[in-house]
Length: 390
Image (cartoon, rainbow, N blue to C red; front, side, top):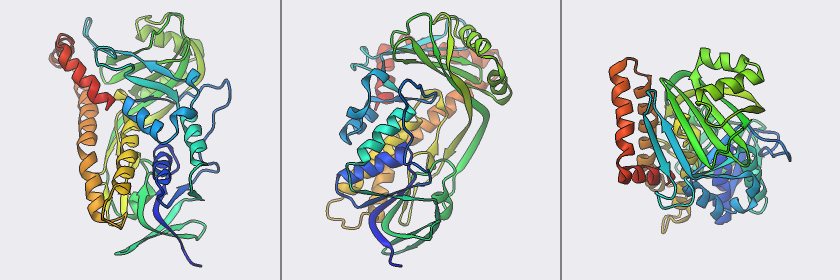
């Protein structure tokens, strides 16, 4: 049976892989998207709030707008974050970022994972992107391209295979690309709550040693919680009754948002750091969680993935005289463009986690003093806010 031929084959139908397929398809690139799910992307049911919330940066918002996704979202389910406050693990240690001070209307936009997935899925219907069910079980490469073999036995011929299939990437394994992994021995416990006091568009984060509690604004009188905690503490939180969990979150946040009531059941996922030193190989490139996973304390994982998708689509469609979309010259160009933001975010999240995990009075003094010093230098605060938004 003759293999179907494409310019690009993308393995992984999640947010990053699907948005990359959409960006390429809208620019006329012959693209196939391989997803292992029964349905391409999940949908959102009316009145049902997803416990998984993303803080989409302004840069990611512009990318989603440019590929026809943002206009398909329900604005009633998007909460602009106009302020962020960070609290250290010592009384009085505090740092705040303000959208107005940073010269923007919002630091981030909070929205549900399923709503974003449904909007990307809907936008994909308008482009000539071929969808196949996976998983990928074989990969053969030569100077002219790559043959991607699916579990069904079908073979797809392409110039470039994009691995967007998550932290346990099968494409990464088939291509023989090595990942450095660090297990934090922690879990992120996520849930949504209704609140007794207005959040006023402010996201709050409390460092509690190695544990981090974040409360993110949602539309109306709701917030999303992400509590990163050691395994034993995460299991304890998950085992609490609804009212007891609400009380624990209210106590840990100093009662800032008043009385809390659980809206969505709590669930958790393990935390790890993952980095592929070189995300490109012959006829293969890794993007999103297949190439890098960061601690969620900065809420930037999905934004790094969208940045990958945007940069790869731009490099491929603006390749000039290079006819081959899988040429190593293009892959090196992509690697150079993404190296600095990825390494910076990996270093920042891993370093902050390690700094606050250090026991003892002296490390506690220095990290909290650092927060207070940053609070007194507005130009540095603005610079950090603009860097995060980009």
